[in-house]
Length: 249
Image (tube, rainbow, N blue to C red; front, side):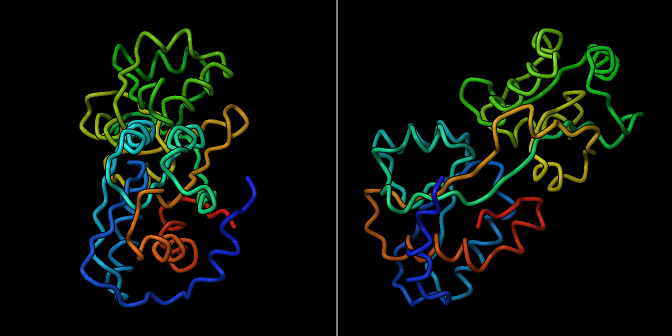
């Protein structure tokens, strides 16, 4: 995607202007929580208004926006979810923001540290348990996972063992609590949870690129929305890269 926010970002001051008390409402993919919480706090500390963050599965959030849910900024975990919200965003503000990767995680207490990407290895590691990931029809992480597992020749053997959740952080929590033997989540999710370990990385070429687009909503009347988007792209890189994200420049 063309970086359609380039001119917009340059036009915005990197410092945060003073605003009133109008709360800024942000809908965001659940996998962004750790880094975005920190970025929002930094924005507020720099003089921005209160930021209310609503996390969930990207497609579910897009559908809420399309149905008229009030929000000022939307950050999705995939392009199709942003496409689903196309009528509810300002297209000139849409731009790719971050990239991510898919990994397989197991409980920190698991007896193995490495998982080969073949059916026999998954069968042994699962040991009758579940493989947690996002819902394959509505959650980006689940869609990416299915695409990768299919290309790797693993889908037929693991599909009956899937435990699908409405967002990727819930899948991560299943593994962290020992309720699922394995999980397929983003690299950044694995970085955020000390109770799990990465046992395999799914090849980037086994699924579509994992890109996070963001946009200001069409209904937003909050003057802080554009500044918040510019602030994320210009002033918070370290918060996101520390979590394992890659910034799209």
